Image 1: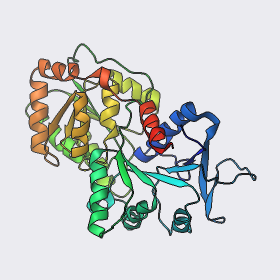
Image 2: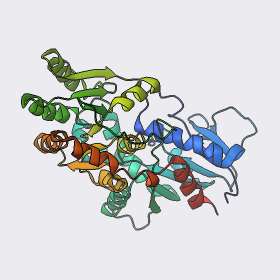
Image 3: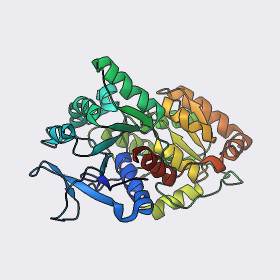
Length: 358
């Protein structure tokens, strides 16, 4: 049982308008921590002026106590939060962090420049925490190997989390019994090169040229750095007669309608720390054709997933052709979803609380 309070860092999550994967992780955990801990959960933000964490809701009597535990799921470094390194070294309370991925280090060619600049110091600073939770076994391995490469003699324990499926929608949807006469494919995620919508479009154009009929729905806002060209390609393809629709960002009600009509999710990402859209698609009874990334392969144990070779439009086209050639293949993939095994965010929160409790 947690002796003190859980101080949950919402410095950025409380301000961001876009539902990025990091924000969704933060919001889902906050929701479950409220259920698990009640008033022992205190949302905190970093104060540049005071150089420490303070309550998100102002409370002048607030002081961090030795029995408290700080948990952050955010990205930061010393020049963004001046004094945070000294705070961590002070050991005023036990501190834990959630590590998402090392994508800015591994793939600077399609990562926000600011993230590329920040990430090395962020990953080094994680070694100052009492413990780290990684969003997948793969992310856990990447972080530990980075510390080993740096030559760190001491580093905190890293535990891998199982993230939940019920992030966007709380209600589970059973898989459909039938496949649409004209299959409906859903592509969910911010438009950018990392998410691979360009690969999806290339593969789909191969199949349309062969006379295979299906519709593709692209959902997500456009990354201003790395997404404009992809958006332009999709719009040009639609103008030329492609059976596709560009929806942009949708609210939950509109997204629910698309999930209800869809027969297959396409997830052609080039790099992920976890791959939340795969989990969330399975929760809505929707099978996924996805890149064979290591963290995605972890999720494939829940069934409903067919893999293709990462960053390979020909491989994606081949697997998609196989699924669409006969409805029995797609129906079989849908029926393979192991609904009884799908994880929920309540379990993620319980896993964290159990690990940080004394």
